[in-house]
Image (cartoon, rainbow, N blue to C red; front, side, top):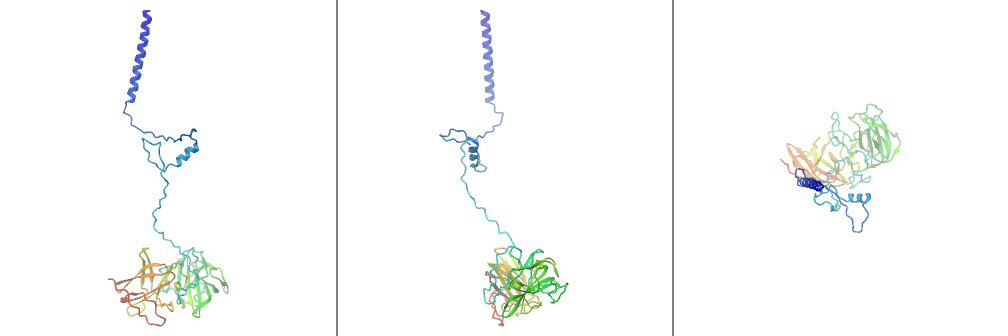
Length: 385
């Protein structure tokens, strides 16, 4: 009996010791601070009082797409995140890209005044670069001091060349300069058109030079925009481009006029024409004019005509033209006799905007005098040291 009681007592003591050890271990783990604290985030879907069904994958997806991008989560409260209201923010407008694209042309013909004659469409289509080279304009010198009798329009070889107005092809091939077949002709393969209309009872002609291929024949009638051939680099050239001329009265090298006063300008763009003289009203050759648009921070350059082979318009009597200028306010600048001169000028759309320069008398924006009258514009600007 006594032995049985002792055995029961021993079992009770073992149980008490085991309970004490387990309690001590649990207490030690719960009070340990040796491990870092990493909060865990669990998104608990909100369920309405009537919702008894578990969330389906579709419900979970719809809740995810409503959360605003990159939400800031709180480690203590995340189950009640409310998505931000959708907002549209207008981005800051960047600078206007520089492009060779131009607006469509005014209707052809375009004659805003009695003195203007924008009769011809561009011979290169609007989807191509069709702005004449600015540093080799009509009247400029490049090859062995030969004065340029047209404008050059750069374009890749094979670009279509279009008729600038209706007329009849009177030349197609080599030899347009001399008027006879000549494979060494500086114009290379060329086409000449005599147009169905004239100006002041004089015939009008256009010439298309340096072609790679001709697609018309002599005697063929063409309409505005008809294909004449392809841009090339035949003749005397430094690269592929179209040489375009306007001739009046007679069809020869010495009867040309500045094409930029005959080509229809793009809608909203204008032209500047000027007569540059010294103080005693003698024409100045190869005088540089800089045209600046302060808003665009852009410059255009032009030089007055050379001495030979070119002709001024009967009304404007110009010796410098800058075409293809977006309408707006510009500043004309030049240097003369060691002094700088400038004048503001507004380019009106679709118009020829005129100036004169008279040496130390400076610039004037007076309109041209009637044909045959003396040039006596009043000075508008004083020299700038």
